[in-house]
Length: 336
Ligand code: EPU
Image (cartoon, rainbow, N blue to C red; front, side, top):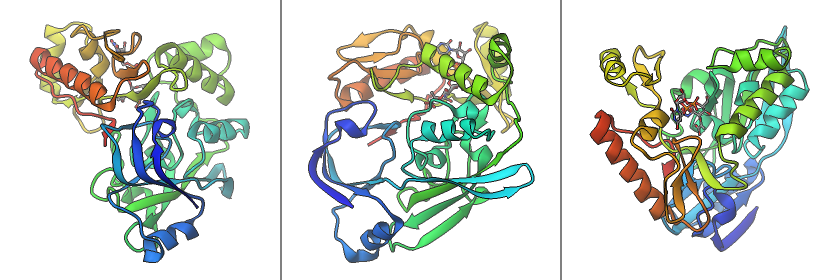
C-alpha cells in the first residue's frame, strides 16, 4: 500500500485536470483493502475509488481519500468446451487485457480494443464500443465491501448492467471496490461486425480474424478519437439519449440524416455527437476547453483548462441541444 498526501491528480485523470487530493492510496491486494475498510487504518472521507481516471472530471481539489486498486494478473480460470473463463485484476490496463486475449486466440472483447482505463472500471460503467458491452461477456465480479472489508461475488445478473450503467455506478455507488473481473470468452472466433462500416472495413483489409478486427477498431478509434496521452479527454462526455420511437420518428422527419438506432429497451437511441455537431459545436474552443474536431461527443483539454471550464462548456452544449432538439443530454463522464 502507498499513501500519498496532498498529491496532484494530473497523472490520475485522462482529462489531465490539475487539481489535488488530500489523500491518495494505491492498494495492491485484497488483504490491504480488508485492513483499510475493516477499520485497521483511518482515512479521511469522502472516499472515491478510481480506475484509470478515464471517465472522470474533477471540478476542483478533492478533500477526501482517493483509492486506486492496483491488483494485477490475468489468468485462465476454467475451460468448458469452447468457453473459457478468464480473470483479470482491477488494476490491469483494459487494452492490455484485450491484447492478451487477442494474442491468445480468445474471442469476445476484441471489439472493445483501445478503450482507455482499467479492467476494474469496465463493469462500473459497462464500457461499450462497436456493438459490444463489457456486461455481455462478464461472468462475475469479485468486490470488497468498503464499509467492513468483506468480500462479495456479484454474478452477471446481479450487476444491473445497462447502457453505460451498473449497480456499481447506481444504487451501490461507493459501497464496493472491484477487485477482480471474470469474463466468459470463447476459444472459437465469433466476429461481431454489425456496427456501422466495421464489416466492410474488416473484409477490405483481410479476413475477420481477431487480430484484424482489433487492428481495424484501433484504426477507427485513432481516426475519430483523441489519444488521451496527447490531448486530455475522457471519451464520450455525454450518453447517447434514449427517446420514444415516436419522438425519434418525428425528429428524423424534421432532421433528415439524424442517426437513430433501435435499442433493446424498445426505445430509440439518438447519436448525441450528431446533435452537438448540428448545434455548431464541433471543433469549437473556449480557452483551453474544447469540442473535438472529429467527434463532437468528446470534450478536450488543450492544456490548462480547469475542470470548471470543461464543465461550463458542457453545460452550454447541453443547453443548446435542449433548445434546438428538446432533448436533455445526460453526462457519461462522472463529475467529481
Ligand atoms: N456523429 C456525427 N457527428 C459527430 C459524432 C458522431 O454526426 O461529431 C454521427 C456519426 O457519423 C455516426 C453516429 O453519430 O453516424 C455515431 O457516431 P460514432 O459511431 O462515432 O459513435 P457514438 O455513438 O458517437 C459511441 C460510444 C463510444 C464508442 C462508439 C463506437 C457512447 C456515449 N459513445 O459513440 O464510446 O467508441 O459508439 O461504438 O455510447 C465512450 O464511451 O467514451 C466512447 C468513446
